[in-house]
Amino acid sequence: MELKKGQRYTFDLDEASAGDTARVALPHPEVLAALEVGHRVLIDDGKLSVRVVETCAARDRVVVEVCRTQTAMGVPSQRFLHTRRSVQAHPDLLWVCAAADK
Image (cartoon, rainbow, N blue to C red; front, side):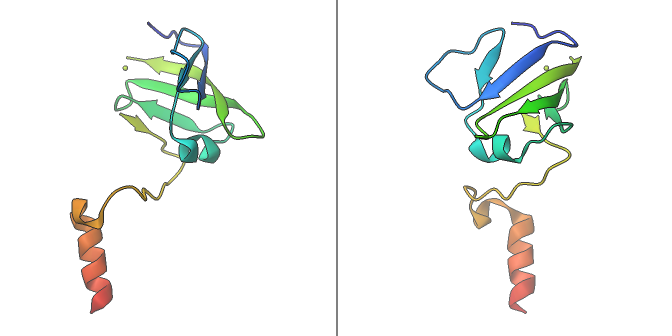
């Protein structure tokens, strides 16, 4: 499937349904909850760039508009605390923890 510039596309939490030309599951509720209208989302190291144009009150769906297609995921206008990752997996976090112990 190819997305085209200007196309609207939906990210939601519905993993039971297959993605299609209108929507796809994004099984990360913390990401959907943090996105707001105007945020840019970079996908596949920025090869695909979308802008959030609509959110819903339940924070389980966002509609985006494709800004750039060329096709990982980054949200440059939002920071996330990745609670699923272990401290051992991140040398920078180990350094911070070691510095805090001094």
